[in-house]
Image 1 (cartoon, helix red, strand yellow):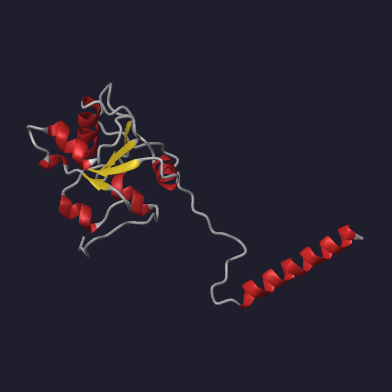
Image 2 (cartoon, rainbow, N blue to C red):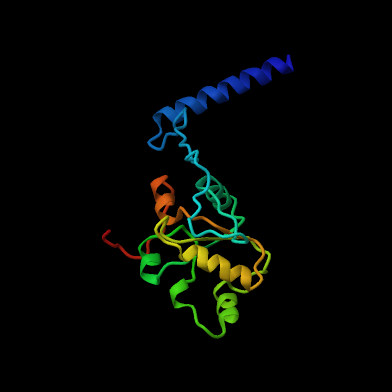
Length: 172
């Protein structure tokens, strides 16, 4: 008897939920449309990569780390490019403007004194930009132990339809 009542209550609840969703202006689709994040090609590795460089990660790994809030993303591009569009929440450490002296203090300050073992994912524009590789090498040289390079960069991120953070509107 109790089991029958539970089944009836559940059936009424499901029916009510379906009808509510159908008439709602903010309805939720019954079937999701999920995109494939993996290009199937693995990470993009630049021809200038050398033994001992930080590991290179593919778009699907970068998106997973972003979704899990595990890593800090570091944009190695100029501030103007950073403001035009970056991976949301990224920290801008423009490689070309890094000081010759006091580099360690500069990096530590830019990263908010993160522990050296915290996961960092460095990127720039994409395949034509090697600033992320150079910044990644510098971070490793300074003792950061969990550095990866997302060489596909902001272009691949946006190409896969992932959210971009824009501080200013820029023409391409």
